[in-house]
Structure formats: C-alpha cells, structure tokens
Image (cartoon, rainbow, N blue to C red):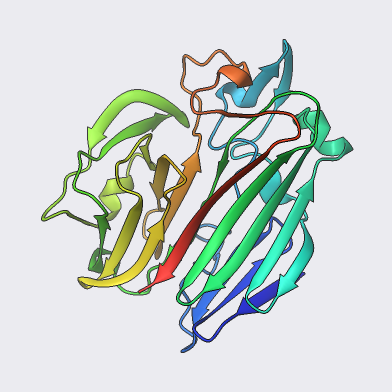
Length: 283
C-alpha cells in the first residue's frame, strides 16, 4: 500500500512497507527522489533503525547475550501502519512484536511523521520506549536525491565553512583513517571518484544543512539540525546522491559488541519518547 500527501507546491508518496518515501514532486510534476532502479540501487529513502550502518560481525550483545542485526537494522523491511492522515500530513507506526524481540529485545514504537510545509517536506522520527528498562538505539535517514543532469553538473555547499573531516570505511566498519573533503569557494564539485571508497562518513559537523546546486543554481536543501552525523553516498554512474542524516553510525573494529557501549549510540529511558526531524526543501 501507498499513501500520498500534498499541498499547493508539492506532493509526497510513501510506501507502507518501511514507511519509505518514494516520490517527492513539485506542482510541475518534476521528481526529486530516486526512482529505485535496481540496476543501481533498489531503494528510495529507507529508515535506519534500530542501528545505523554495520555491526562488527553483524552481532551485538545485551547483558552478555548475543543478537544478530543486518546493516541498518530491520525497520526498512517491515510493514508500518498508517495511524493518521490529513491532506499534507501522514503518520506511520511500527511496534515491536515477537519477531523483532528475537533480534532486538526491547519494546518500542517507531513513528514516522511526514508533513508538507510550503516547498519543504519535514520527516520526523518519534521513538517510544514501551519497556521497563533503558533502550539503546540509533536512527537515521537515507534519502536518495535524483540528479537528472550530468553528475558533474552538481555541487555541494555546506551551511558553514569548516574542515570537512570524514572517516573511511573498511569492511563496512568505521576505520581510523580520515580525509578532508576539499572545497573551492565553499563548494564541493561532485564526481564519482569522491565515492570510490564507499560513503563519506562525517561523525560531526558544524553545519546544520547542505545545499545541492545544479549548474551553480540551488536545487535542493537538506536541513539536519537534530542529527550530529552525516553520510553521503552514491554508486558508480548512478544518477542520484544520498544525503543521510544520522544519529549513530557503523561499528569500529575496536567495538566491544555491547550495544550500550557502541560509539554514537542513544539510550532512551523507560516510558520516554525521543524526537528528531530533518527536512528536504525544493529550491
């Protein structure tokens, strides 16, 4: 099933499977979200929960007991329920069940709230701890922005001038090797060589937003004030780029395996709710 919301400027369509955004169009029917062609990458904008990235050996432990989780967790592969809908807003819910408890021994509800405001789509995450103990988790976004022109026609502009230090991945884990993303007049021209070692992983940034320019003109702006970390990724020759606001990231090789000790993990007290939001603005 799918749900579509709209206002006078935009329309957004979301799959109930994974509560995944798969279309964001303006009122001229121009599409801004990657179509999901599996020849490159068969997804559009998956939600990453209860982990972001890859665990060492795809394994973690809670109170000495080991559990298995795939990269980016399980929420993106589960069916959400539509629990509220207006013309410009839709709220989706995923609750823990017997199957999730085998992989992640915590009682939770995850809500995704999509709201259109003028030329922006706000995407809010609400994580509710329905259990009686502290709950460790990460959450992140993975929207793929469609780039219909030649890839090298695009560039990035971060909100602030800063040293853009990113961490390299090694065997899908965060390595200790870092590089600085070079800028020219605060712009980063896009080319596929930037991603020859997989994603660019920024653990921390001073910037709270990133603008994509198309032929030097503003195209899309992603605001991620609530998210300290950011991933940027594409595949060779793919006509999209993923701008990924994260709360958490992959394990390091030195990680102990205890989820409570994982670098970047969030911990939510019993009966508490966590909220975060990012937005995609059409320029």
